[in-house]
Image 1 (cartoon, rainbow over the protein chains, first blue to last red):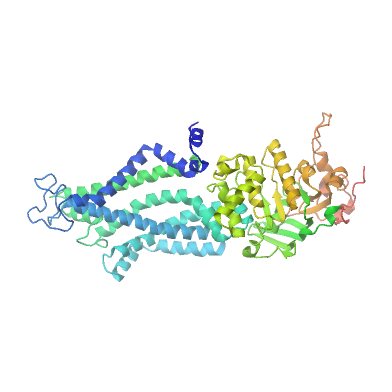
Image 2 (image 1 turned 135 degrees about the horizontal axis):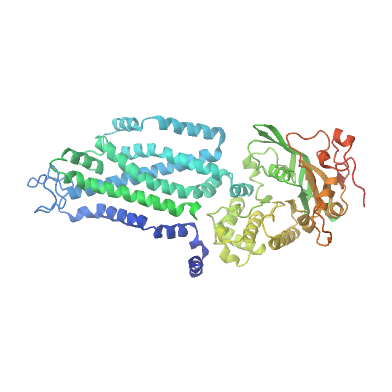
Length: 296
Length: 326
C-alpha cells in the first residue's frame, strides 16, 4: 500500500497523521487545487500587479476618460468615467476585498470557536444563556447594526467595517462549534482525560477545539466569499469603502451605472469577484471532502 | 493474610447512586461498600447493569449530570464524594487513576501517544516538556510497548487495540497512582492480548504496591489476577471474599449460578450450557425482598419479604439461605 510506503519513507510516524492525510486527499482533488492556485495567483497579482502599471489607483488621466480595454494607451483594462486606470483600481479593490474577507473571517473564527466550544462544553444553564444571546443577535437585522456602527464612527473607516462584519459573522460559527462540542463531550476520550485530572481549560484547548478544526476550516473557507460578498453589498449601498478607495463592490456599483455605454467597467471587477468567489467555494468543497472524517 | 495489615487505600462506604430520569428516579447503586488495601486487587463482577462501573465512576466524580450520589469514599484519608472538580483534579490522574474499557475510543485521535501521556505528567507534576517526554518513554517501556521511541510520535489510529490499551495503562500510571481502577480493561481485546494485559497489570500492581479495583463480567479474569472478589447484583454487593473462597465455594446462589454458566474446558458433557433464567430486575421496580429472588431456585417467603443484609466479617454474603460448602 502507498500508506505503508509513505510511513516507511518517513523518519517519524507523526507526518502520516491527520493533516498529512487530509493534504493528500486535497491534492487529489483537481478542482480544489486549481481553485487554490487561482486564489494565490489573484492575491499575488493584487499585491504586486499595481507596481507594474505606470498609473496609481486615484490618478486621473485627462486624455483617456472612459476608454475601453486594448486601446492604444497603457491602460490595460481601460479607464473609468473619471479616467482612472481600471487595472490598478480593480487590483486595489481585490486587495481590500481579500483583506476584509480574511480578517472578518478570522474575527468570526476566534469569537465563534471560543464561544461555541465554551457553551457546548459547559452545557446546562450557561449554554442556554449563551445560545439565547446568539439567537437574539441573529434576529437583529445586521444591516442596521452596520449602519449604526458606520454612523457612530468615521464613515468608510475600513476597520469599523471589519469589526461590524466579523461581529455579525461569528454567530453561525458558534452554532456549528457548539453542535460539534456537544457530540464530542460524551466521547470516551474526554472521560479518560477527565479521569486523568485535566481541568476544563485543558479539555477545551487540547481535546475539544483541535477536534472541531475540520468543520471549522471548511466553514471558514466558505465564510470568506460570504464576507467578500457582504462587503461588496455594503459598498454597493455606499456604506462600505469610500471614494477614492475602491473595493470590488464599489467598482461594480460604478460599473453598473455605465453598463449600457461602457460595459467593461462592470465586467472587469465583476470578473474578478466571480472568479474569487467560485474559487473559494471550490476550495471549501475540497477541504470538506479532505477533512471529513466520515470519508476516511 | 499480609494484605490485612496493609493500610486501606480506597474505602467506600454506603455509596448509593440514583439517576433522575424523565421516568422517575433510577437507583443504580445501593449501599455499595468496599475496602481496597494497598497492594491488593479486588475484582468486582456482575452482569451488565449491576452497577459495577457506576460505583467507581461515582468515586472518580465522572457520573452524568443527572446522578445523585450519597455515601462516602475515601482515598487514604481524603474524602472524594461531594468534592468540586478542581479539588478532585488534585487526585484524579495522580493518586487515583482509571483505565477504560474501549482503547479504540478512549484516546484523543489528533494527539500523539507521547503528548497524551505527557499531558497528565506536565499537568500534575509541573515538569518540563522534555522531562515529561522522557518519562512517557520510560512508561511505554514499562507497559511493554514494542519500539517505544517511535510510538511516542505516532497517533492512536496507527496502533493496534492491545497497544492502545497499553498506552491507556501508561497514562493511568503516569503519576504513580495509589489506586488504579480498571473498568473492563480487557473486554475489547482478543483473548491472547487479554492474557498479556492481565499479566502486565498483575506485574505492575506487584511492583508498585498499588491498590487495584478490577471491574469485569469475566470470572476467568478475576480468577487470574484478583486477590478478593466482590459479586454485585442489582446495585448491591451480594458476596465478598477471597478469590479462592468465592470461586471454589460460592455461598450466594447468584455466584454459584454465574460459575455454573461458565463453560469448562474439562467438561465432557454435550448438554446445553446452564443459564440463569429470567432477566435482571428493573432498577425502577426492585422487588421488596431479595433482588435475585425471582430468579433463584432456593427462594421462599422470607426471601420475598425481607432483603438479606450483607452478613459476615471477611467472608460476606447477602442471602437468607446461603449455600453450604459442597
